Image (tube, rainbow, N blue to C red; front, side, top):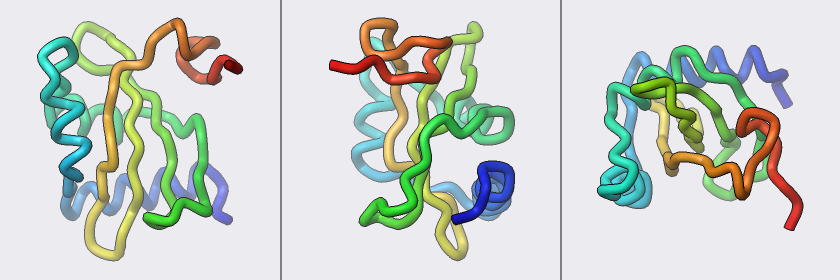
Length: 109
């Protein structure tokens, strides 16, 4: 399993080629109460950090990125680098009810 820096570099290289959004990601990003733009997604990819790693994801090795969007709002992005593109699986605005530590650590149920 690559370390976070190597995996993050791979994510950014694939995003430079092309980003493909899953239907789920588009639906989540388009919700009126959150509206996350593709420009914000690019910013999260270019400046964000990996906060969870999912090497055994059935969709392929993926991870959860934390980054900042418009107005410095926190955005979580689940993505998976493929051979020729970056697959964006979902994107959402984390809440303090589910996250702590600056939206870096999941709260236990």
